[in-house]
Image (cartoon, rainbow, N blue to C red; front, side, top):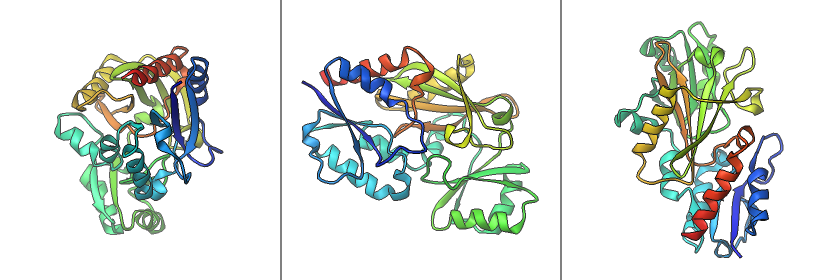
Length: 289
């Protein structure tokens, strides 16, 4: 009988996870599935055929420790999905720069190492925008993300600079369509498009995550948005078990990649009736390889 681990965190309190939908399907088909926190000690990873990274949504707090755990898993008899090489590439948001160099349209971005307040003030002119959003090089769940305005008080800029001290921040112009039209998230299994959702922040906010009050709904992505997501997957050297591309529209109407999530994205399995089975079947196929 096949045995699979879903890598998670000590507690998902305060988070929205849809993994139970696929866990039930796998167990019904005879697959043993354990949910294992990445912080758990003494786990025998050799007991598993697959370890699927699913919801370790606190990894960004101790990224190097998280990577060491993944190294241990990849060195065991279990197969890690997605693989460590992809995690290493995707964990630092420099991957956006790589995508851009491959001709992929991304939200305009500048990279600031341990930025000072003066650099943040200059960023408004560099990006030609009166509103900016910045986040750390390694981050998730909008942790330490800041929205800044050209007329922001010194205290707001200082708070952002303090949050990004000792790391690299990526700073982007605020994209107004996020509030009016929303952000598209397109989910793929084994290199094939599965389903999509549209995420709109609550009034007055810029964060689209459910945990921050964002509104999520299923959608059929526009053709140009789907084409851009497909172009992102053409850059990858392999067909990954799962992937998610987040796309917004720039002021000129062009779609642009906000993020390409390959480590532990929410797959929004509850927003498409066929999605849990498609994901379960993808895992079953990997067990046969």
